[in-house]
Amino acid sequence: MTKTYKAEITSLNGDKIGTHPTGEATFTIDGDTLTVEITMDHTSPNTQHWMHFHGFPDGKDAQPATIAQDTNHDGYVDLPETEPVSGTTMVPFNDAPEKMDIPTDTYPTSDADGHFHYTKTVPLAEISEKFKEVFNDDDLHLEKRVVYIHGVPQSMDLPDTIQGAVGKYDQHTTLPIAVGKIVEA
Picture 1 (tube, rainbow, N blue to C red):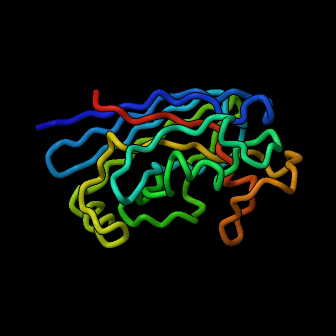
Picture 2 (picture 1 turned 90 degrees about the vertical axis):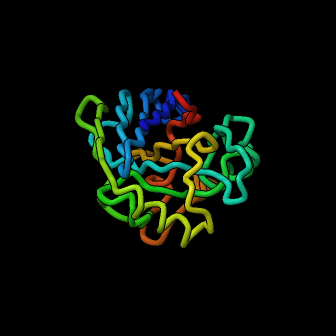
């Protein structure tokens, strides 16, 4: 049996970053595979964009962050500010989602027009096993997750109040630029 989930992805922090990213994500579970397809437009051009689904390990229903989550009132919603409504970063959409390796340089890079298209088919058993190892649940619960697109050019001037650095990756890499709620299609 095939199950399909979709997310309409809309801009977050668009007024501050000077572009309003939009797109769509489709997740198709077909037998023993999960196919993830994400198409984005109006992102920062020629920029690598980290993408993940976020959620709560306890099964709470995640919601997209809005400007209301800007608790330090700097005009940006940074990664830590998304956590109360969206939960934690769970599965990356890079070259190997099933490994759940978040900090890598294998995420898609937008073209000169700010467009990119990502498609990856992963073994459902592998990603479920890794998900269980990390979050103690082998069901991805896609209907309780949100998709985040991150990343602005290193040349963009950002305030020091933006948090979210992961190892060698600074706030330019982790700043959320778009978000969408995953729903069953």
